[in-house]
Amino acid sequence: MAMGLGSKRPVTDINVTPLIDVVLVLLIIFMVLTPLAEKQKFLRVPDFQPDVQPVPPDAVPPDQTVLTVLKNGHVLLNKQEMTVEDAMQRLHVAYDGRPSKVLFFNAEDAVKYDQAVRVLDAAHGSGVNTIGMMTDAPITAAAGVPAEPQ
Image (cartoon, rainbow, N blue to C red; front, side, top):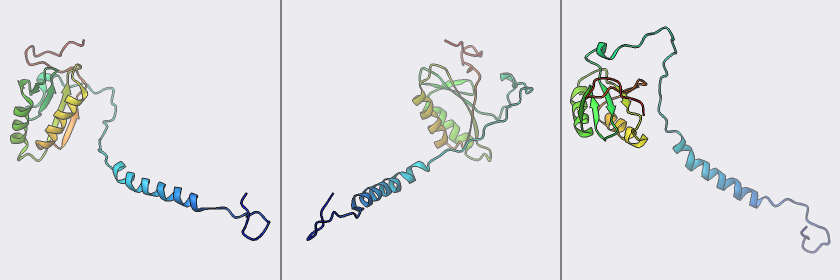
């Protein structure tokens, strides 16, 4: 306990200066971190309907675009294998005047996450504003059948 000047009694007041310093530092930290935490992506999750049958691949409407990432670094754009840059140029031309800019996305199981995200980001930069994630096994260009799981 501290002793007061000129007296023999201990000082019983609480020193709040360190407490105020800590509170101000915390306030500054939260002021800096709050704008970073507000970045978000909105998504709509479909309702689960067990009685709905999936559409077979040969019955897909011709105006739908399916982009599949392959493990060799190329992509399939509606079953045509090409480089990512060529696919993004075609997407940009195809979506330029369309009111509905929906893309269905799929990837092989062996594709790394960062490669898939780079392709998704490039598709968004090409004009796609809605991306549907496909959960079926991707269809390869060579065989036209779902790829075998490894």
